[in-house]
Image (cartoon, rainbow, N blue to C red; front, side):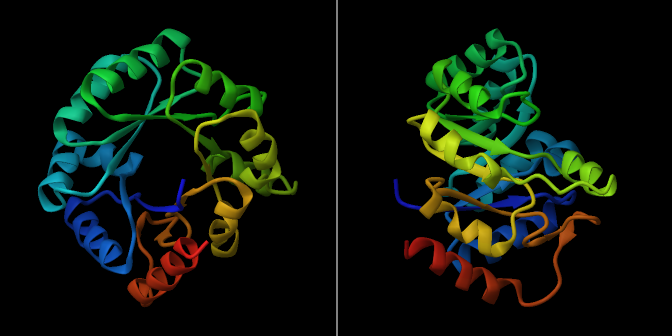
Length: 227
C-alpha cells in the first residue's frame, strides 16, 4: 500500500486537538488518531467532534481495548471512528469480538503487540485472529524505564524486519522513533507512519509542540508520500 501519514492527537483538550488536526490536514496528513489521552479526557465526545469537523478523514480511536471488545468498538464506530485498536495481550475472544464489530460496522481493526513477550509471535497472532493492521509498539513507560535504568532504549525498529516478514497485513511502527526513523518506515516495510509524541507533541506535557509545526509537518509528509 502507499504510505499513509497519521498524526496522534495525544492531547487532553478537544479544542487543541481540533486545532492541531486542522493544521495537520493542511500540511498533508492522511489520518487522524484520537490518542489514548484524548479518549480518556473527552471520550466519545472527542471522537464525535473530530468527525463533525472532518467528515471525510479516517479517524483512529486508540482505545487499547483489553475487554468488552465488541461494545467498545461499536461505540467508537457509531461516534465516527473508522479504525479501532485492540491489544494482542487481550484474551483472544476479546480480539475476535473487536474483529466482528469491525466487520459489522465497516471499520478497520488495528492490533497492537505492545508488551508481548514475543513481539513477532504477537503480530502473527493478531493477523491470524482477523486484524486488518499490526501496530508494532514499544511503550512509553517501557522506553523511559529502561533508559532510566541505564540500558539501551528499545525501539520498534529492532524487530521491525521480522514483524513485517511474519505478516501479510500492513504494519505500523510506534514508540520513540526520531523523525528520520519515522520517515524511513515505508522503506522498511511499514507504510503506516505515525507522527506524535515526541515528534510533534510534547511528550512530557501532552500538549502541542512549540515551533512552526505546520511547515515541519508539510516537509515530513512530502518526504513520506514521495516514497
